[in-house]
Length: 165
Image 1 (cartoon, rainbow, N blue to C red):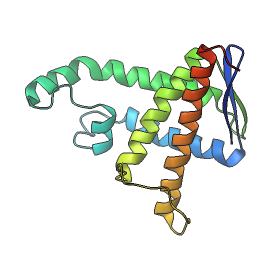
Image 2: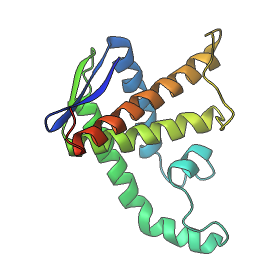
Image 3: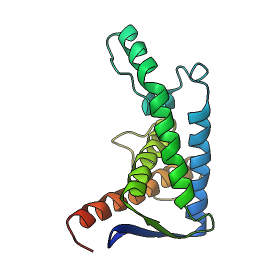
Image 4: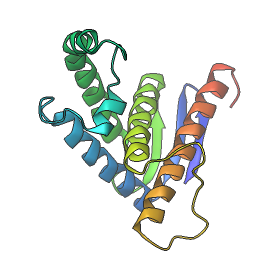
């Protein structure tokens, strides 16, 4: 991966084929979560993390808040996911984003990290694996790679706003 960099009014990165494939697979998994019937996903810790309760101490108030906001949130997340999918080179290559597209990438990569981090039970004490010896290490490595990708996007957007290239 070549991390995101500011280029005029865009941010640009390069993903190799495997990296683009990983992002595509994660998008597929997130899409399944977003398309799931909200009634069927009650109690799913990933859904609870992506759509946190609007009020922690009053369940009825939290349910009312969710009823008012969840549909719009799901639609926004689906739109962001579609933007990421449309700008992701399936076979790897350059990712070139305008400010709106970069916002969609930030929000979607955040949701991907929340989902993966919740499934892997990542905490502040978690560390990247030193060696990849099992599937859990692979998933943890993907989480930290996605964190680096998101971090480079944030840095590129800050640099673009500051007028640095």
